Image 1 (cartoon, rainbow, N blue to C red):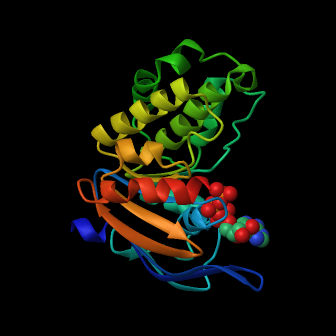
Image 2 (cartoon, rainbow, N blue to C red):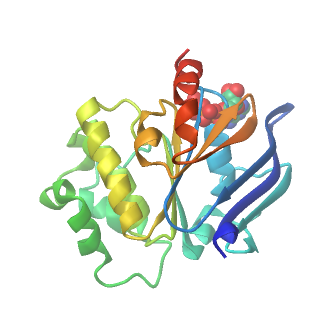
Length: 236
Ligand code: ATP
């Protein structure tokens, strides 16, 4: 069943008259990390929003575990095990870390009793700061909180849109380690990464988005040969 976990085919998405995704096919197998890289404005965020139920497609199909996900609202997808951490996710600054996590849990009615403690185990920095207002934390800590908000709903698939945007290199390493830990715990990760360095370290399979189309670059062990070229294209 691996190929049937998340499957996108022939997807077309527009804003008004402007089509930003054309004929997009994407297959995310269960387990591991799939990454989509590509330049600013290529359409990566639009792809994530469409999978997450935030943006409606013009046409095409999206199935999650064999069931159509098109037309489902984000909270319904969360209940099915698919969660989305948007780019520049803003946590609620005047709420504490704990309150932010409790708020994120609202769509799910059957949470495991120990879910908060398991997420705090994964993020010791948040554990220490449970009662701190989120807005007083650093950008890196707020990004960790955003990822933690995605995890408290106990997803099977987490969509991470540019989780390292604007973060210092040391913090990028922390986010990388977190992604690998999430994956080790059995949560499948679909990552969007403009700079591609993160993908180079964590992705099992890689796609390149360019001018509204998505190209499959292959599995780890095969896609490395493309890196230098992509790096030039995405940075320039
Ligand atoms: P970024 O890294 O900047 O987020 P991206 O690859 O994620 O880039 P998208 O954000 O998906 O790209 O944007 C794709 C195209 O769609 C861009 O040309 C963008 O200007 C346009 N676009 C995005 N959101 C909207 C919107 N709400 N209304 C109109 N056009 C939009």
